Length: 214
Image (cartoon, rainbow, N blue to C red; front, side, top):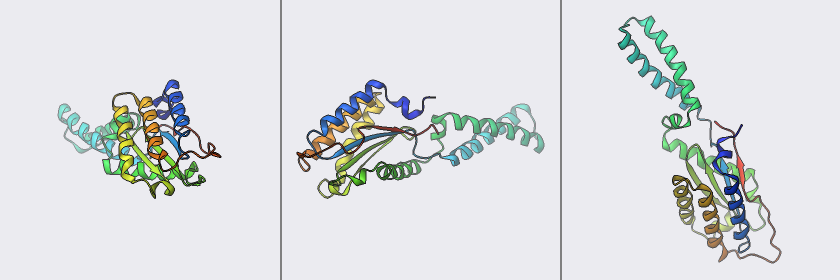
């Protein structure tokens, strides 16, 4: 079964992104890793909250239409509506997103990006020059993390430009080209501070796609 993360990029997109990473790393000793995750969290609370809100609303409407005003009939209708709503929220990502506050999504994406940074060894590069371009498909969020060696010389706000490149591309349905462009821009930003070295080697994967559907 194809997951959200796997379907986010076509084979052509992947080839384009990997090629962009290889080109960028010819001009900088920085290690640039694009990572596509299906989701940054399970958001189970959204399923319960969504089912409660939808189930209660549907129950009130159904009881009114059926002209059933006794408590037991309403409870039976509510149980059925709650179960149907719970299933709908779980299976429909667009519906589930409606019951997750933006602040919660932002926080979960940030935490997941930091976890991925360490899980995939971006903190262990020789010169502390790892850069993670983290894309979380479900939340429609992009987060860029750079290691200490880079942040000592590059203003962290610089990465806002890279985020905007990717998010704009996703909105236009050109996520592969956008990620490749973001990688290229990262290479340009790093080249002046971290030029490629004669003994430079490829320390990290050129693209990571991970995560099951939520």
